[in-house]
Image 1 (cartoon, rainbow over the protein chains, first blue to last red):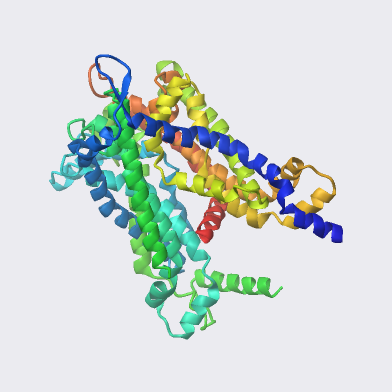
Image 2: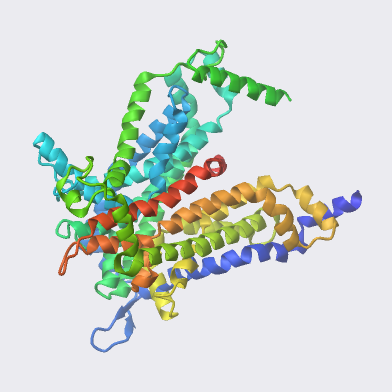
Length: 300
Length: 310
């Protein structure tokens, strides 16, 4: 008996350290290779500049960073994704929250079916979603063309005025279900007696939503917001694939990620491209951190 | 005993409420009547969700001329689904099947390996107290805040220097790391594997690895399926990484291959194959949707385990 307790106590002691590491080490080895090494390498690259004529590279300190911060093309894309996230993220999370609350309310017929179908687009590869919507947006053989024929309108979802909203629609379609599921899962963990207590206090459905459900969802909302912000800043697949349909509407620096990609693979400017990637990563991290701080401060 | 009785009573109420009658228990605020307005609004959203998929299914039954000449949601002049499938599978010496096989390889090795590594590491972090444990956790979680695409260019340059670009390893190795999977397994292992059970196995003289393999894995199974499912989805849908790492069409996964087919409708020597793109798209979606339907229970429970701890 006491031997068991001894072992048990020692089980959390120092003699098992190496065994714990042996479980974690394989993950960490690959993690170091595909996460840490590229970060370090990108930092290294960002401090150098290619020599156009002599070959080789020279150390330039923070010159690349200064260039990025004064680069109109970079800011053009950065402001565009900022505008995108300010509009698209609230719409998407609002829809997801509404759907989760509706499904959780017990006031829907066939709630289970709604949950499944709304989640369905998450299983559709982003590339396929963009191709589908891209074709549907087309005025020649897409649904937009059909609608124009039917209503006599002149909708051009792939035109310059609408393209950002059209991209927002694709992203919303893809990710409402995923966020809905996060919110719904969090709602299921609210203890039943909390609702019963609220009902005893005479709280109606709206009051229950505002005073119990939304506060219970706060953590999930913060997480979903952070993931969505990171996703918006990374915007690449949708504009890059649509660009093939409308090359004149979407330019090569439409989003910072497309800019970094095209600098590398179109222009061979690897050092500057790495700098753009780092600045974007930092901006994303700062904004995600601020959201998290705000989220947890309101928790107190 | 009382808990299960309570649950049974709840279930009874719910069934009655779903059957249309109001529950007799007036104290329960949780089984209100159904709302037609709410159901109607949700149906609208459902239609929005389904329209692209319905459009896709209808489009796969059309010939290329019909795709261009008939309304998107109306059937074509002939039913060309099987001809389209056959053409998709045989076009350019059956390259689509090659892409399908590549995708399977990347998913099986990449997502399978990611799940194995995340499970072992999550278990290690949850069940052993070793120095540096907190640091591991902070670094891995902190790394998730870095956009993967920000790392893509340096990763490409690094892999290029190591001679890994244009090999399957360029896709598989980065897929092996799932910080989200690690987090989920850590949370899950902390609760699903009782410390006493591990101690009992140790007294029986089992090695740590054997304990993990024979005792812990079974208890971790539901969490493992969830992590595997999300790893499969992200590997199956992977586009950016293969786009930059691979230039040989032979190594493409479905996502990159399909966009290439779509792109050949434009530019010099344009050769539009819209009917093949939509059919290929449908064939790409179906396996994942089937998996999701079969494994519903797991992704739902797994997500809630994650959100509780957040």
